[in-house]
Image (cartoon, rainbow, N blue to C red):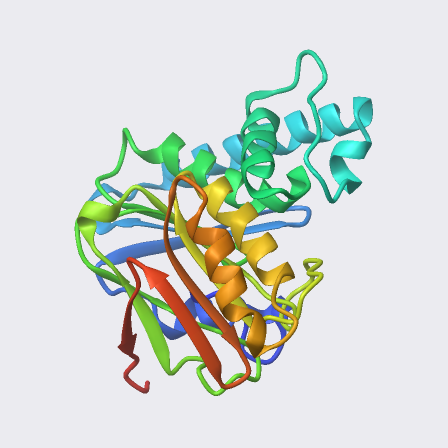
Length: 255
């Protein structure tokens, strides 16, 4: 899922390597949040940028306010019960964390991506929101999501096809070798297709945690495929790969 970057996380080069020509791209940044958003060109207007900025600011405020009341929500590596009055985004993160067996912040990028995507859906025909390699997608066309897996030889050599009937869909990636997120494993890429996107995010985290070597790939597959809502899994560790479910791997053309 195109997940992270080519040679340095902060540069996010992957965002321009495999951009679709039929989509209009723009970005929204607030503090640590750095989102790339794409919509069909005929639906794009400058008002969409303002809408996304307001929505992202609101989501961040809701989470920040809740974390002030419930600091453990930010730091826990295991599922947590919610406090009374938790905002909807925290509830969604907690539900995904419970299903995946991880802490709620493992679902934050996917939850934000889906929330912004859904906020746009009444105004656009197609939308893709990418948040640090975690994607929410609603598309009327086939899309190829490029795979970045650090120093693995598979990086930018393969992608996965997502068909229109699969969307709306989350495609999320966890990596121990790329990006700033915490991983307890050694997977170069754990890619999960699932709905909602926060579930894909949380399951990708735990699947990646389970991979210490290529011998663990099947164990991680077995974990992920048992979770309701997961439709596809792709795991990469070095020069080894394992996949399950609705995962069509395609070679990428060099650009």
